[in-house]
Length: 165
Image 1 (cartoon, one colour):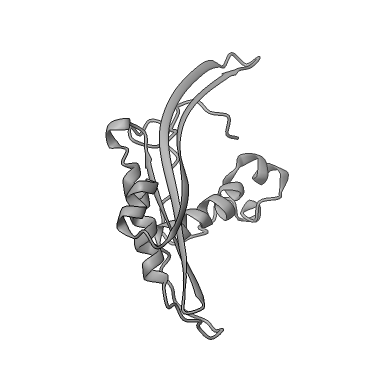
Image 2: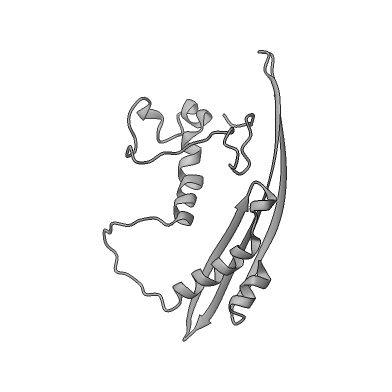
């Protein structure tokens, strides 16, 4: 991915990594549950940054796949450079109330860092989830769907058995 980034624009600083992950989960308890599952996936991420006219700019790119045939780490490098170049000469906006549409990276951050813990059964049961007081109530637009289905074939790291609450 780094070579692809530098081929796109060698004037930028680039860094990143490529990872190959294998996971195995087994659950056994006194209620008769005895199951296990395995999965693997690969991911690459790249950041690209630069300085121009005294201003800094940066961008990131990712490639994630459950199967090697679908994995394209070079695309992470190209995307990082493209995102960095788009952010060049950015402007500051005035504080205020704005309607926004989240891009896929921002939406993923919100889901992972804000919502994921709130959806945990352990967090709801302990009363530490902001969703706990709203059981059996609609808490989001019906246009929003979040699915955790370990049987979806191309889902990254999906397992039919895992250690989530």
